[in-house]
Length: 304
Image (cartoon, rainbow, N blue to C red; front, side):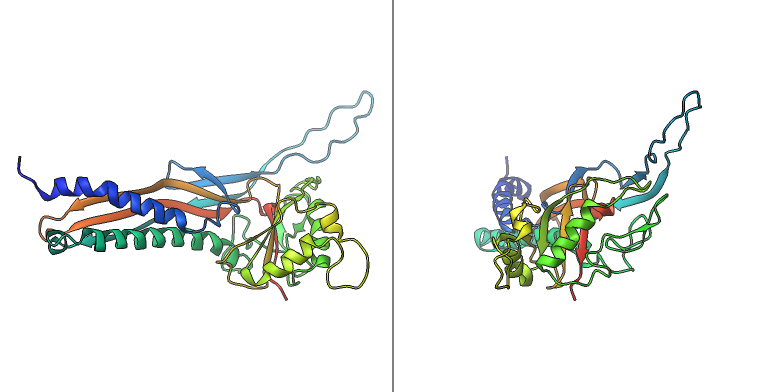
């Protein structure tokens, strides 16, 4: 049987996939701590907020029970994007045995490109979190003082009245109270708590002092650091190198269905020969979407 370019491609693909996989894994994964990840089997996913019921009233003796109507509120849509990139190795490079030099280097570069795009798209959900041009299902940006509810007016997930405070012990104390007292759409206390703090590289030193100092930072007092003492942010702080605002910071809560990622098609690679040119072509492709459903999953400030 004659050796053809298609058979060569089959032999080379495992090696390129191995290089691709190693390099893809070396790009720091900073999105998975921010997002709940689910699989998808359609072009888009929709999540509808169910408002639940209001507080149950007292029923008088012999009186009829009261009925309440739970209802749907806003809908969050996640539309899958196709992310793909490719490169080719010329027939001449193959003839000159330059596979190791060209193909493997390009596979590494392709892997970094695919991984970087995913991390950037995830971070941009937060980078655009205060921008009124990027709204969610309720018509508000992710972080807003005007999230509408069915029965409790507008609610806020801004840290501070305007979401423009810098990271500090006082700012975190304000945030803890806001998180613990947040209500659902019918005015019932959610019972939320903070989980983790997420900052840009420029804020990591302040975050370390504020969370890990046993005493109040930047003071001569001997008062304890209550945030640290009570363990109010149990998972500590995490740095995202793709957060663009050095002053912004975000607190993840234990409210489910906050920031989410839907994977429509996981990362896959493919190699095939091109008859006309004789080149070997290597492609990487995946489909996914990022967004948020329940804004109560995060509180944030864009800094002063």
